[in-house]
Length: 159
Image (tube, rainbow, N blue to C red; front, top):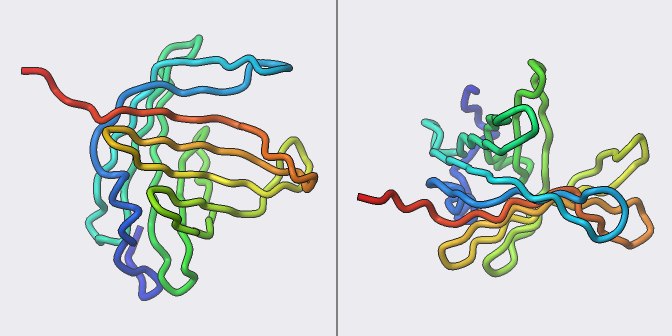
């Protein structure tokens, strides 16, 4: 991605993405409170333009390891985060509005879930030695529903 005048230096909250993290990926499993959990990893590196990060996600699935790469770039003129991902060979671009609050930032955007209009929220939370990414949606009824969650610990290589 080319740097443009719209892009600016990444805000402080984005630097929590830098580094290697290992842990788990959680998602609802059917009806009720059941959660399916698999091993996961995220590696984040600064982009050369200093306006964002390249993220590589890996998680277990029935068919092996699922990998995904995303480019998170700060769009200073819009005051928003631009995310570019490749899924099933297709480029998908989304824009999220950021609301930092303490050790967390809530990223929100309009979207759709199962064909219904929804508000999507991605919460990025940096805790001591841990990074959490939680994606939820709201169909307009005031209820936030978990879509998925990464709970990742700082990766420390053993000697």
